[in-house]
Length: 243
Image (cartoon, rainbow, N blue to C red; front, side):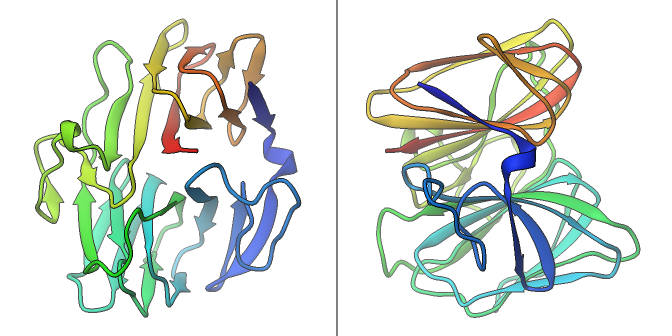
């Protein structure tokens, strides 16, 4: 079953001084039937104006993955090292037993980000931070794993991932990216009892008979295989999460 979420139907929430476009319940926005997708708790899109600071917290038992669509974002969480995430980079904070102050800042230019919140599989773990710089697109246009809670994906146990390995999640989930040229396709296969959630960052994409524009999303349930075809050059982000 594939359910399309059009960008025009997303919610609007205000938190930490920033306006978020929300796919699921978040902050001051609630919508019946859009509370979460399995253990994917939130998907938020935001454009941060120059000089903006977005503050959230306290948070616990959540993995918060922030992918920068364009711009430069500085991240500061509690006692962790100060990080700068540039276009195509990913920042992960696994809040574990609790993080009190989470900040994302822009300097003299605007930035656009996508945030994915995953419910951790365990509680009370020590918080940790991980960063993944932009990696070149796959030559064949296939999905590249950005973050994973699957041991077989071999995530690096360091703060800065330099070799293309995904950052580690505390949730049994994956966050993937595909950069596609017009006419190219990307396929992904998952297991039983799992849901997929796809977000179009840019370009025009097709799933079956449905055409998706930037900001549109598709929830895929009770289907193990997904194929995305690009009608225009673009980027998609995909989540594979337990139901």
